[in-house]
Length: 244
Ligand SMILES: C[S@@+](CC[C@H](N)C(=O)[O-])C[C@H]1O[C@@H](n2cnc3c(N)ncnc32)[C@H](O)[C@@H]1O
Image (cartoon, rainbow, N blue to C red; front, side):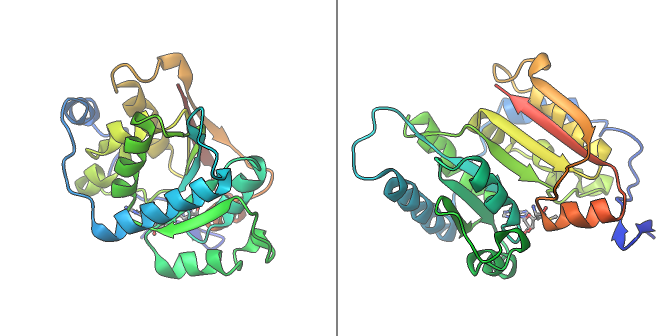
């Protein structure tokens, strides 16, 4: 049974350290293209996000790429509100596939929102793997620039047999690394953080070793529902900052 501390389960795994095949898997993905077609519903969601960004910046034709911040796997959208307050001049797009969680965000019921949604926050229901591919097209075409990309508490997939579902062991990982100037991953599982950091350094021509920080941290103010749950259960939290 997973260990339960004050209500939140800590990650239990049959993995004792970083995934043994990590380097081989990440290098293989870095050398191939992830070709799965984008689902229609995510294309529509992406178009809505693009429209929001265009509206935010107005009709003037841009002389440089539009800054856009992403909050991937935003759950109830609480983190999107916090991030939108940190980047008041930039559209912040919260993305999650769960309609139930997003409904709370869109109706302003996320705890940090206090009913007030910053004008630069926007949420879409979408599949992240597809959304990231479309976002990278915008970045590659010089239309978007992503100064910050939040990945707070992604599903850890702690069983070894499910390891390749972790974002850093999935074929989408090179796309994710190419997307943003700074990526912040938060997790309550040290192994996930260490693997993510190691994998980031394996993507060629993207990240130098000294631009990846993997550290234990304790947020002063909780920014997500999962963060609050883990902190209340006194679990150690980890974060990885990948800068390019
Ligand atoms: C553990 S929850 C964390 C939610 C939020 N970041 C928090 O800290 O409270 C992970 C979230 O990622 C979303 N998610 C996982 N895989 C996804 C995918 N492939 N596409 C879109 N959302 C995904 C889930 O729906 C869920 O809301």
